[in-house]
Amino acid sequence: MLTHQKGEVPLELEYVLPQDIERRSFSIIEEHLQGVILPDAERSILKRVIHTTADFDYIQNLVFSETAVSTALEALQQGADIVTDTNMALSGINKRALQKLGGTAHCFMADEEVAAIAKQKGVTRAMVSMEKACSLPKDCIFAIGNAPTALIRLSELIAEQKIQPKLIIGVPVGFVNVIEAKELILAGTTPYIVAKGNKGGSNVAAAICNALLYQLIQR
Image 1 (cartoon, rainbow, N blue to C red):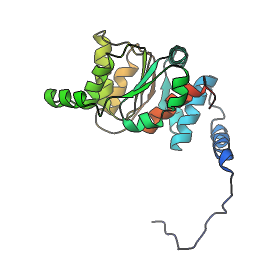
Image 2: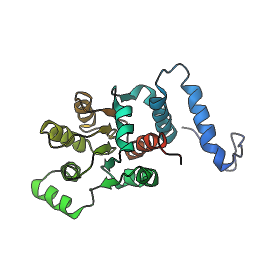
Image 3: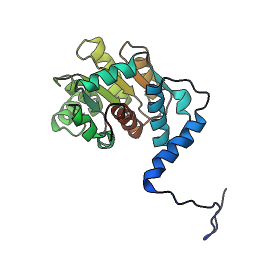
């Protein structure tokens, strides 16, 4: 077990101006991406995910369907909305950038109707949230960072032709049905960005949304 003595400073700290921290971080990330071949649009998404998580496993884990990024960017340019499965992801999405493109971010997890229906049916709120999203009048991108049941229900709704997402960001984190739910999306025909395996999270979902938005809107 590592120990640390009070007052001990093991490394020499460097003062970095706030505006330089992100730039320096991305420079460090880019050094680790030498030899990784990705189109620029996908590379920028991968870099923001690594910046958010400090986890270079995403080099292998984050996968893109062939038209995922181009389809998502076109949809956002045309004012598509974003639907997510947690208020944490909702709070992390740059809603000002999204609004500049004419879009709105939604999370229905705290919706009273969703809660009542979920209780009545004996299913998760995440599943009912996906059903509620079917009533949205605009094209949508789905950013799922927590609930594998949301991905499962999305897959069913797509098969039932009740919804046609422009993109599914499938990055729920955990151990129960997480890998299986992601495999459903990987096996489908809807454009996707998926974190294979157990890793992911609401912060990753928001980071991917923002990486897409920042390709269209200057912060």
